[in-house]
Image (tube, rainbow, N blue to C red):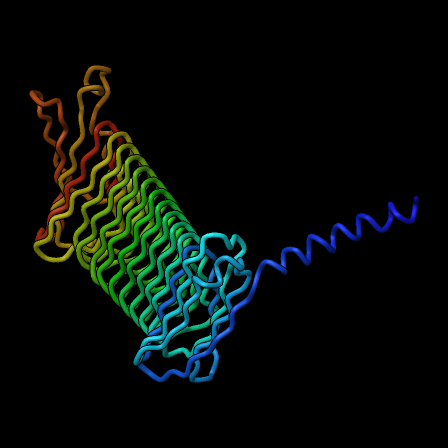
Length: 358
């Protein structure tokens, strides 16, 4: 009896193993390709892993195809387009491994799996997944990615970038041209951007490196950090802090209650507007700046308490003039530097304003 008890568990393990493999199959296929050719991969589900090699050939290995789904596999080539399709419904562990030359034009879609491109690719890339994660190395052309809710991680992109996810995190090392990124609620981290950029998240933090041609940033409530920018800068958050460094141009920045820190080199004729509810604003200006700074905040609560509202505006520069509007219960202060060729409006409800030399 002891011998039977020992053999039985082993038999059951082997039975399960061979049963799984008995009812699942793999598919392998390859097609010769040339520069300018396109690969289209479409699957109802399953992860996709892509590697680059030096052969003028596309090789696809699809694994764990349920026997009932074998008929739903298609691998074709028509002129310069190679197409792989999987429409199966029963292959729960299905996934694909693909080898390609770097020059291929890529169009991938899966109903819910992850997509990973391990090496640099040089052709245009379009990827969509119903909810999986997407990761790529460097891309030498335009890039478009959408996922229902996964994370997206991308290296350096040599052309324009369009990325959207229903709620995951997004990271891009750099984009040489324009960039559009949106997520329903995750954090966004972007390095340098060579063109104009639009970045938004439903509630996460946003961190951006240097931008060359203007940017729009918005978050439902997270913090915003920008290390450098030229052109028109528009940023808003429902309640987080905003940090804008090395900005040359104009700025429109607002937060519901957070602090705003701005290092600004205003261009001639520009208008910048900085607003917060209960936070503080810190503005850094050069002594050589040609600018008029108008600082405004509600003074009513300070007047009622007998405090001097002027103490809530502090400037490293001399020449600030104050004007108390009794009817509106507002304190308005003005500072003119040099010729005053540009204007900066600073607005707080009940916070503090600091104007500092840099």
